[in-house]
Length: 378
Image 1 (tube, rainbow, N blue to C red):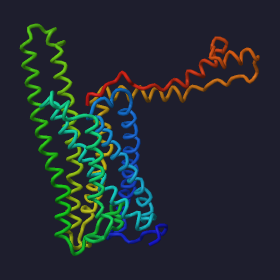
Image 2 (cartoon, rainbow, N blue to C red):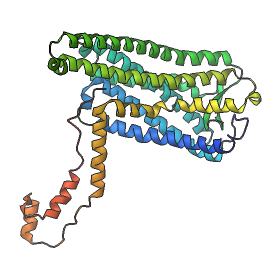
Image 3 (cartoon, rainbow, N blue to C red):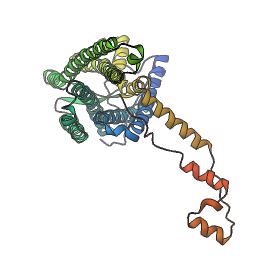
Image 4 (tube, one colour):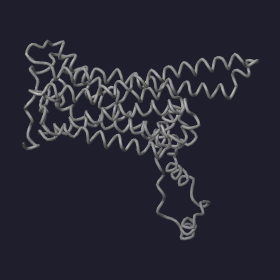
């Protein structure tokens, strides 16, 4: 099929949500796409600035942000179908977007699992963790997660078990299963259940460790004789930082579990449903909500970092403020007239003869600086 032609084959048994529901659904698709792209772009810029990259777990955060950013880019192609109710990009691109979306969701889950395991090792085995978990090994593990996921998901490009079609109920391409429901359920379970199970186990372990750290911190504070020592104890501050870091990871894992579990449930519904004509409007509303709930995780982590990590939010605010100042300032234009002596002095780097306007114009080019004084504690 020519990719330039409209791909009219879709699995929808009705036209759209009626009335305002259709407009609301289109706004949700647009909003989710914009938040994922803008939020994760800021996230990547902040995490790759200054001393953030000195910690191995930050590489997992960057990889997670890249996967979420690409998810937002894929979601952009659902904006036009949500308005025109047709897939204009062709069959090949329909299959490709479905393949990339499923792979990115799996990678996001793997990155969160790696984060949980890395933080658990760092706290449970503080001395060995510096040997076990290094920046080089983190990069290798990230590469393997991306490579293996895209290789294992390559079966989505072929219609051996199912056919990928445009679904106007969710404004995206989904898989339509026919006579291979058993194989489809097994394949989906092998890809989704282990990840959700490991995420649950690691989250429980993190919560148990979190409670242990909290109890240890309270006992240490009670052991100190004076209130001044309680507030200023170095060990107490370190425990407080570890406690806060664990809280951030627990929240991220919880958000991912909430967003991915309905998506897995929706996959099972796609497989086992028989007659679509008997479905009610409520079912289709739930289908739309479950499908796009999986995309909430692509921008929810940005809000978690901003509201729970003061160092991240501080660096982000500074970056935004400097960008505003740089955009408001207009560099002064140098006069084309001047003596040869001034020109020679300027060429030699002697700024004493350059006017104040020239100095101000040069300062604007030095406005953007790295937040090197900020250290990530997430």
